[in-house]
Length: 337
Image (tube, rainbow, N blue to C red; front, side):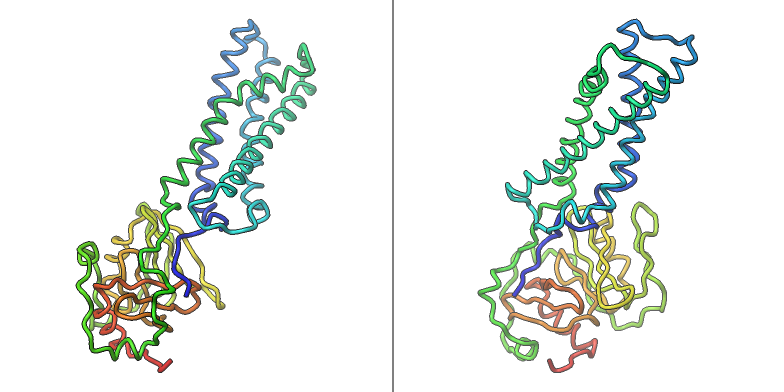
């Protein structure tokens, strides 16, 4: 049995949710402002500040323009070929080998930006017939200026991976090898009561299925008061908590679930879905669509749910097993598997 675990760093959702276009634009703006300050101080210190010289000022503008051009070009190319840069998927937290690979990727991105800036600067010097004292002047000048933003880049990416809760594994259950491989009928027919759940499980804010029928309307999933997803109830399969984020598994067409990362809490999603009786929060980390349940594995000591089109199993908290049984039967979706 495959125990659920958190997302892998090799997937596109990591790029769209963490290293996003908005973040790229922020880095571009920050890098450009840093370049302006650095070049003004540098040329002023060397006595080369020629504010009255229009040609020199135009050259300076083009030199500064090399920065956003290089950052945007490398960033967009990196986004487009991410699957080739990191073709494998590794569960996080990353091991030493994967950390080294992540470091090399970041170093490669920085080197590409540095190389483009040097190339653009040399072309600009040639266009304006500006000849440095040495052929190494541009690479050395650029390299010296590149040190502070490079340190900030490495630090910030390390912070992002940790802060966004991508390092938390969702293995809160007992080992799968210890679970009895029982089908749903055996679970439902058990006459024994569930053992008293731990206090933390008892404190879960779990939604019970309601008997009323929800109105037919779209579910709007928000991020910062902005609608990110607009889904019909039958399109939404699972919501999985990841710290300050949630993964939303939903179906657009075909037989493959889409997966979207939202910066919101699972409690907010639970509140939004409170009028839809098909959704149930089975665990502090999961909300499922009961109509998508295809199989249940385990027993009253540990219960896992198989959701249609989803590879991983979803955990049911021990304190919610009885509620889950009742909710499952109310849905009238038992098919005798």
